[in-house]
Every structure is written in C-alpha cells, then in structure tokens.
Amino acid sequence: MSAPLLEVEGLTKRFRRGGREFAAVDGVSFSMAQGETLALVGPSGSGKSTVGRLLLRLTEADAGSVRFGRADLLQLRGAALRSVRTKLQMVFQDPLAAFNPRATVARLLDDPLRVNGVVARGRRSMAIAELLERVGLSSALASRGVHEISGGQRQRVAIARALATGPSLIVLDEAVAALDVLVRADILRLLRDLQRQERISYLFISHDLGAVRSIAHRIAIMDAGHIVEQGDTAAVIANPQSKTGKALVAATPELPHARENVS
Image 1 (cartoon, helix red, strand yellow):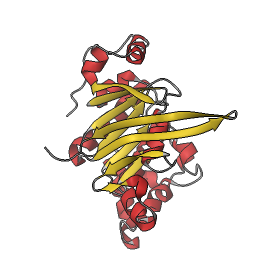
Image 2 (tube, one colour; image 1 turned 180 degrees about the vertical axis):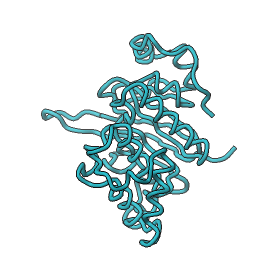
Image 3 (cartoon, helix red, strand yellow; image 1 turned 120 degrees about the vertical axis):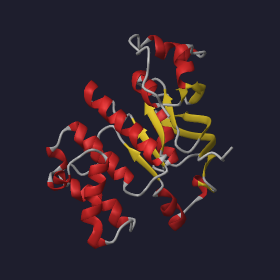
Image 4 (cartoon, one colour; image 1 turned 90 degrees about the vertical axis):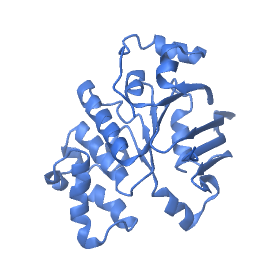
C-alpha cells in the first residue's frame, strides 16, 4: 500500500475570547490518500475551517504535525515552505472576498503563474487560456473583471487559480455553499472530473451532507474541536454512530437515496 499523501497528528489550535482561552481544534488526527476526497463536516464553530487554515499555514498551529510527503509542514520555513505550498491550494466560499474584486480574470490567474515561476512570461497568456478551458470556461472570459461574471463562473475561476501551480491537494472551504442547486451540481461534477483526470486530493469542508455524499470517499465529523466520527461516507450517512453525526443527518431529511459514483 502506498504511503498517505497527508498525515495529520494531534493538530491543536487555541484562541482567546473574552479573556478566556478555548481550543478551536483539539488533537485532530486524520490521513488522506492521493486522489481521495475527505469531507470534514460539523456544526458551525466545530473547528473544521480552522483545520483547513492550519494545513495551509494561514493560521499557525500550537501543536501537532502535518506530514505532506516527506515534510512536516508545520516545521518548514522560508524557501522550503514556499516550495511545498505550490502543492497545496485553497478555494474559499466567496472569491470576491478572497481576491481583488476589481481584478480581471487574467490577472487573478497570472499571479500564481508569475509568482511561482510556473511558466515563462511569453507563454502565460496561453497558460491562462488553458486553465480556463480546464474548468469549462471560454478563454474570452480572461479580459472580464471578476466582479462582472456570475457566481458560478467566479468559483470556476477560483478553481482554475488553485490548479495553476499543479497542486496535489486542494482544500475546499464551503466552496459550493453560496451557489444555487444547479450551479452547485455543475461545480461538484467539475471537481470529480478533475480528480479522475489528475488524481488531485480534496479536503472538502462543508455543512452540506448532500454535496458531501456526491463527492467524498470518506467523511470526518467534527464537534467542539474534536473529530467524533469518521469512516466511509455512505456508511456514516446511512448509520451515524456519534451524537453529532445523527443530528447532522436528521437535519438533512432530503438526502438523495443514491449518489453519483465517486472513484
């Protein structure tokens, strides 16, 4: 059996609020294989988004280890960290909040190509067109302002930007939560197709069990900073064992009886 792509052990982060300290993430451990989707779900405030930010070092952990390949991400600094970061990317719920809303689509896609030296300057226009085509958008969209395009198009651009550096793992933090039902289904289909083609792994952070059921191979349920249950997605949703899992399933009464194949 091949080694896991990602191994998280004892990940911990504490914050202070109102003069009191609390653990937003408390000893979280999990692993992921290459080409796998792990869904991280839980109620608001459970710590799932903080886990995503800790993995990418957008927030610094207090304790634990995050092994990605041969490196512990939490121990890397400087050039070593920048090099590994090209292989981990994040897609947020709202690209307008994450990016400069006045930038053009071309500028958003050019930045990671330029900063990371992915392609030579003379070839970047072609690379931008190729990225747009990979996510099902016309290359003509490159000249448009990101604020001028639809929410579904913006999220496809955000995915294209994440793909620009050739990542092995993409953290998707509520990436389809703000989209309507039809657009959400299209984005989930796109993510599955990209995964099958390129063996990308996804950490899919969500409160939407319907979306989770359609994309995730495994699921980890969080509550109060802990993982309280994890396992095969279909099995956990069909028969949750934790109190939190049972509450999440009960709150989603219209889960589909069947899901598209996740492979």
